[in-house]
Length: 204
Image (cartoon, rainbow, N blue to C red; front, side):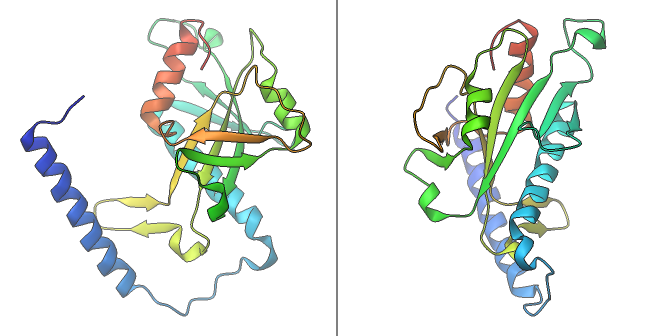
């Protein structure tokens, strides 16, 4: 929906304030802190993305259920209440596979392109009338000290996550490449809309 003059001015003012706040925040941060990531950086990237998914799920009113072990499904989201259903037992469940990257080569003009394990790709690409599945990819800074930003009025997690439903997709590659359009931002609004579609019996 097009923005009117007043709302556009407010948006620009908010962006200018955010840029100013961020500059002051970065300048004030200690530059010599020891961060104990070591050789386990990929594990901490996964942990960070899970935290991001939990925050989005909480804002959308979904319970995040994490797998006890890695079977290809990283977590399942389930809405606590459905606007058109009275029973929690009939609420749809959404399975997620999480991917994260800080590689500049993953970024294209239209979205992120990330490779998936063949087994996981086949599972999430196989259509199912009862199991709803999406893949969520997060673009992150290379340096962990840039992952979080704390201000007086908000807490930021960088950069952004995108989602895609690959049901019906095919690939003969050993590690298929999946494209995540920038338009498919994974936030609480998009998750609420996905849940609404699932409640109507539609695909994500």
